[in-house]
Length: 251
Image 1 (cartoon, one colour):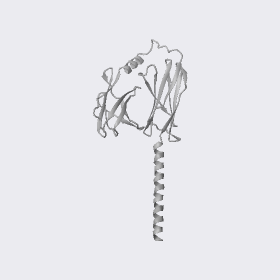
Image 2 (cartoon, one colour):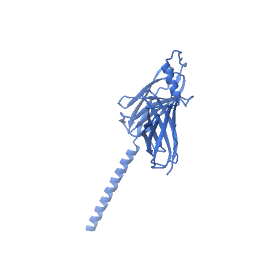
Image 3 (cartoon, helix red, strand yellow):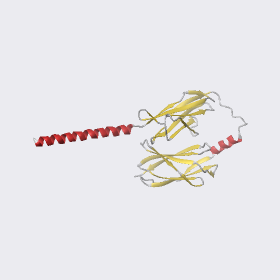
Image 4 (cartoon, helix red, strand yellow):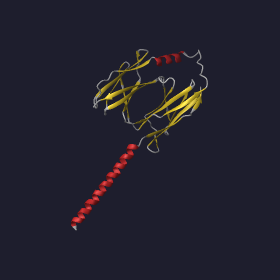
């Protein structure tokens, strides 16, 4: 009788442990599938010169509104000129919505990314809009300041110092040099957005300007395989440029 009691007790403890493990596994799975959702609202068409509202609603999990996204900006370009993209920072309305207004000066089809980073997850839904009408006239009395700013943006360059033999868990100094019209570009905010293959999490790394126009940050890649790095450059003048690089990380 005593042996039966001990056996029953052991079976009950084993069953309780299995149930507890199952509950833990289910909770872990729920946490893993949790992500951010970006509802990007954009009209299908608009006229040249018309103000177009770009707006997103960002949620985490099923219905938690994200009021403190780390990054939210819109990137757009004409599909006939994909190399020339424009970034516009969104306004955070602190209720889960983010928006910006833009005006298109030329007709055509434009594609727009809604770059969103929150809860260490990056999402970039893309939509398209068709702009109709006639190209806006550019008057000769355009200010000298506007012309100068346009020329400066076209003379901007991001140069990444070569990185070779990258391996897992090896600390690397990643250096970029910025120039505007071949002169060092100072006092910018330079960040590296590092994306590992098959990994939703994007690492954001702030750099330090160690010399005139030279920006450095250290980083250690945690996994082998393909990696992408986007160099983001902004400053108080409204400059917003980026450049993409691909790496192979060895074991």
